Amino acid sequence: MTGMTGEIARFDNVGLRYGPDREVLCDVGFTLHAGHFYFLTGASGAGKSSLLRMLYLAQRPSRGMISLFGTDAITLPRHRLPGFRRRIGVVYQDYRLVPHLSAFDNVALPLRVAGVPERDVVQPVKDMLEWVGLADRMEARPATLSGGEQQRVAIARAVIGRPELLVADEPTGNVDPDMAIKLLRLFEALNRLGTTVVVATHDLHLLQKVPGSLIMRLDRGRMSDPTGALRYPPRRENAQP
Amino acid sequence: MKPSMDDEQVQIPQRPLAPTGGPADPAPRRGGVLGRGEGKLAGWRAFGSGGEGVLVPQARLSGPTPWVIAIMVTITVIAAATGLALRNIANAAALDLAGGVSVQIIEAQAPIRAAQAQAAQKALLAVPGVISARVVPQAELDQLLVPWLGAGMSDGDMVPVPAMIDVRIDGAADGGRIAALRAALGRVAPGARVDAQSHWLAPVFEAMDSLRWLALSMIALLALALAAAVLLSARSALGTHRQTIEIVHNLGGTDAQIARIFQRSMGMDATLGSLVGLVLGQVAVVVLGARFAGLGAGLLAGGVLRPLDWAVVALVPAAAVALAMLTARLSVLIALRRML
Image (tube, rainbow over all chains, first blue to last red; front, side, top):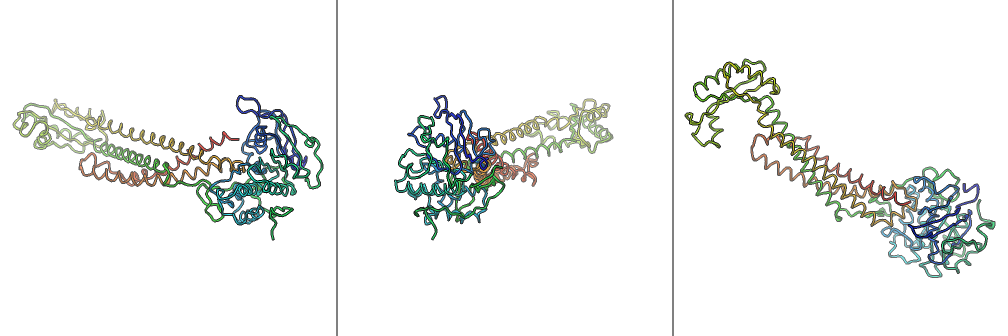
């Protein structure tokens, strides 16, 4: 019950193993509170992407408990998963845009998946593309867009449905430093509206760019809480319980 | 001037989005606007800004699938038409021969044979249920024997040929009816041999039955081959569009939505292929029918396809489309089950 507890997600003793190899994630436990901005850091191969995949319901853990929006996500019946996924926006490092769809159609995809009538799709998508500075590239295919432009389309697609949780996996990995700052501002803007944001990055410089953000650190599959903020999250004025 | 990401304080657009359907979950919602509704993500139909967006590009007739389906449907149409024609031939022949009885008066001396034939004819006509009893004229018998004995061999009793009486009775010539005819002939032609005409053609009917089963088996095998071809095609399409599927899946697309995309895409391929196959198959059937009609053989004349038969043949492409769509749907759903 998100509204009651302010908890967006909770991991308890989560472990993840691919095949017979050792666990890539081991005894991971943390709680994400509504309205906060989190950075997930760690070296390449630390397990950041695996953790995020579990967070956006693309992967089940090998053990442990995951609660999303107050509901046990492990035992969630398959037919209820799409409804939960629509409450989570995801931004990937490699953008994952549908290559043969225009920027407009890529951003419109979540609305169309959800069955929003076409008359209610056009203007929000235009507004969203305008917001990310791509008003003049609506009909462009991804292949004709730069890396930064593609990532902005991906962000617009992730937030068009006003998700409660935005998960970004190395969103600035393929863009220049200036664009990285601009993308972070987009995430901040969404966070100010109450969306919980989790950004995975190995770029420690980005952490200083978002004041008040909380830091989670993964080290060889184990979670650490360097600031203690995961256990004792600070109160935020704009956090909506 | 609208805010943009270049502003110092970026503002996200506030335009409300209309939620559709019920909430995604009974839990209270704050931010999300996407309900539990299910959009019709057509595989080939437009849903783009200008109506040209296509989630799974349709290969149309440029891909191999429609042509594989066209070949399958062509062969199935020919097999179905053959099976129906054989059934018609068998039915017509059975109807024709059901009440037919042949009586042979086997007597070496021609005058006695002729007298027994006349007496037998009278005796047979007196039996209840006998519609007609015709003594086959000697000239007609001689004509029938020419291919085997040559001209003139049966003349003048060089080779004694039995006298034949062609009898028609109402109903089927079963064992009881044959026994009654034999009894009636007992005194006037004790050496007469009585046979149901259907008995002579029993091996022909059995061969036709075998061909009909063969046609049915071919149709079943072709259906399996079609399903296998569609399965391979759907898997190939799944591999090609795996990233798109994962994107739609992670955006909250349901299994049914994703399956529908491929089902419709395959449906389009199957429809195009089936129509081509139907045309080719029907042309082949019509040409073959014309060739057999040209033979002028009595038995084959009964094999003409009737309007109902053509309607059954026309169902073949419809069945192929349904089978292709069902196979595509099931294969995609099974593949999706392997994803979370």
